[in-house]
Amino acid sequence: MSNILSLQEMIEKVDQLKKDNILDLSSDQDLSIAIMNLVSIEEHFFFTGAKTGNPKYYDLLAEVREMRKDLLKKIIKEYEGEVWCISKHLLGASYRLMEVGTKAQSKGNKEEAQDLFGKAYELYSMFWGLNMKLIDLGDVKKIEDGALNNEDKEPSGFGAKLGALVKKVVNCCIE
Image 1: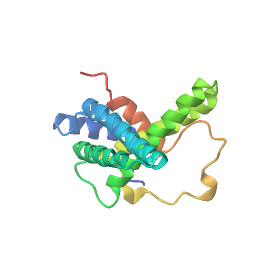
Image 2 (image 1 turned 45 degrees about the vertical axis):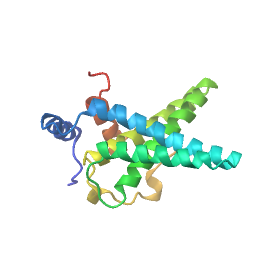
Image 3 (image 1 turned 120 degrees about the vertical axis):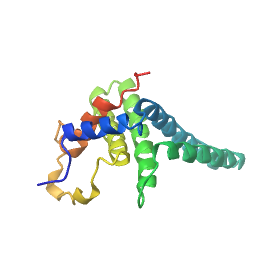
């Protein structure tokens, strides 16, 4: 039997964290979106510095990076190994997929956009699952080569379960 929590067990665990005042998910979600944008700003300062040859952009990049690190500490209080860096990259990749999805949608490529939005949300959910300690990394196993199929349309498995959890417990509209 797997140690992966059921959706109901995940919801109960998050509800308990909320009751214990450990989580303010609506504020943390807003903060996570701000952090996504800061990662993007870092990228833009890098590319602008490289394209223009003006080192002042690298100074601005360093300032934004320090701000992003300080804000990330508000969400990620405890971590092991490379979870800090993984978290940053999950947020960054999620943001980029949202951007590419939005561009695809504006070009009329709705199916592609929906696929990219789904992937962005799965990465975002993985960020929350990792940082709310809902993912037991002892249960993560190597994915067999044939286990993933490009033709799969419905998300399933642990990523889908995390996505359903985030929909239920992370609500940015609660004041």
